[in-house]
Image (cartoon, rainbow, N blue to C red; front, side, top):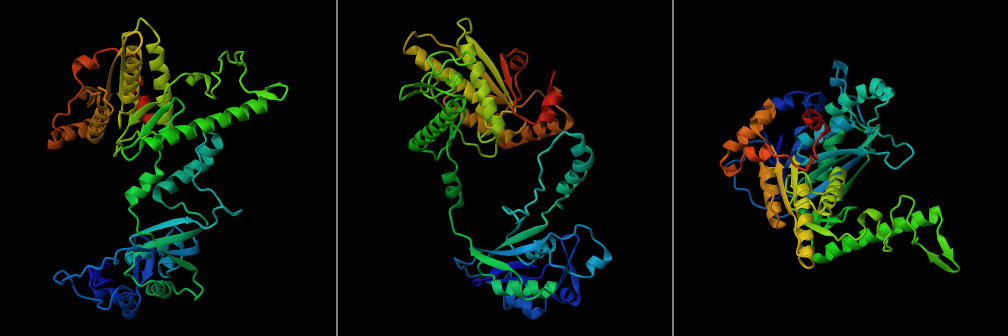
Length: 452
């Protein structure tokens, strides 16, 4: 069935086969393995419109502003069902999470999701475990779970099935169709919720706060105001102070009468001294470095832990170089640049260092940083982000000679597209240079394959 909005309602038109041939069959397969009984014509037309047949391509469709607002129907506490199909199962439609989800999609649901009915209770059972390299997991457990997950068959023991329907669909008729198709008793448990009509882009942006890393990088996005950035930094400092207080009280602190001295004037156990401002020794005296990002579809928005760890590493290594008087130029490669955040972070540190030094000694350092990517969209995004941050960071495709067949195909296709005019493969003079650092926040497989 293909639901079509008409005069504020939703109705079905036949695709193939036609209505009569559909109704002559007693069962129909939903997806690939779940049998579905076809409800009588009066039930179908009640759910999907009064006119149950014929094409509407030539009809004039009147717009109803509320026709495509959404309602969510959630069916509660369903058995997960079986992923095994046989003749006996196909002969009888059974109401379970898998079969119902297929049925709801077939009758016009915009989306269907399944969640654990027992979540938060003593009966909750995890089915997505963290990987462990122990022999028990490798030999007994993961050999079974991984294929199931890949096939989408791993489900909880009891599931809630939620479906979104346009408000033009009649909820009561959808429930009747489910009851008739699956021959369910009258105590079918479900609830209906209105989905708020929100500007979802704005809604997501409001919940996406500036990201502050341990090394005092602040990643902000176009919709973040200066006040939002300042508040995020204040919250970060507050959390860090609370962690320090907890550590001091748990390990014992100096007391001088009624005065509690949180900061020992002597060096701590590791030989580092606190600065008296609640900051950890490694970030003492640092200023916040802001990076403006427009992530788009490129990886590297700062939320992933590996991005934060790489940013911390970049800061520590670049600062080491800046503190050496003999170093005049820092050379860094961001391999698998994504949004370009790591290379931009390094260039921003040198930019801010030069800005401070010009006010005092007048000395300055230089940095040469560039990105390597096989994704043309990422190259566009990284280059734009570098420009937005006022740093120089060109981005290139890798040298073609070192690519495997799949990567070579991706790059060659990208170079042939008109919208990628101006994108280049890395020049020979850059490819043959030695560099101080190479950061590569990419998957472990390619890292291992590319290791010297």
